[in-house]
Amino acid sequence: MPGNAAAIDTPVQDAPSLLRTLAADAVENGVQTVVRRATKSARRAIETLEDSKDDAVHYIKHQPLKTVGLAAGLGLVVGVALGWLAARSGSARATD
Image 1 (cartoon, one colour):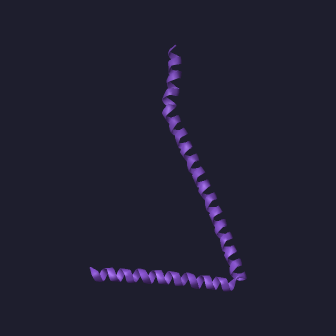
Image 2 (cartoon, one colour):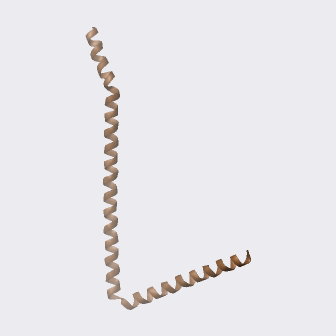
Image 3 (tube, helix red, strand yellow):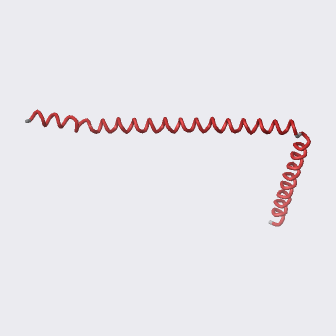
């Protein structure tokens, strides 16, 4: 029976190596899955941005006056807000 004990010991001795291999394979598969999903999400985001750009170009071509008015109004609002913040910041420094 001593031959059987040696046969049993060999798989037990190989267990850590087998576990390391299985763990490495699992990690590698997980990394590949993450990379594949990230690539797919990035492609979808690029397609969405391209669609949005195409929609914006179409709108600008068909509604140029509305687009100019919208840009001017938005610029005015941002300018007033920044001016108000700058004035408020300047008055806060003057009181310090």
